Length: 187
Image (cartoon, rainbow, N blue to C red; front, side, top):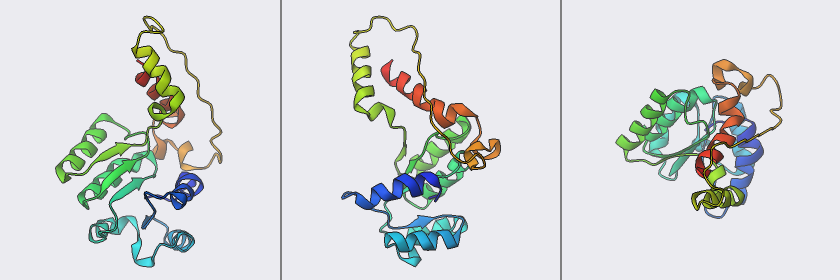
């Protein structure tokens, strides 16, 4: 769900090479865009949905899970819609823009008997997992401070990530969460 820079530049190309999973449906607000992308990845036209018709994914038994890759302020509604349609959900970070929204998402997935996973990756990377293991083993003593930096180029200054109304929260949910998530895993 969502066909922006991350989905087009990283997620779909990787799924196209994956043996365990493959993209079989697209959900986007731009029908011309999803039709063109569907043709590129061999996805049939009847497996393309807009946001208004997301409930129809319930009828597509081939869809086991939905990967939500939309602006942060849309995560709650997108996750709840996917769960209500009976699909498991992988949602990009941050979870949502508030604790209440997060609780709504968790409750919707729980009530639907669906799994919800957030695409935080740092704790699964070998170098970070090893630091966390060493920290828990006491190798670094009593940790009182972690100094972490994450810098990345954000691209087009007019993209949704630069819009407070769509991204919400500034740099912390955008790139700061990598440091925060890694520090939490280490401590």
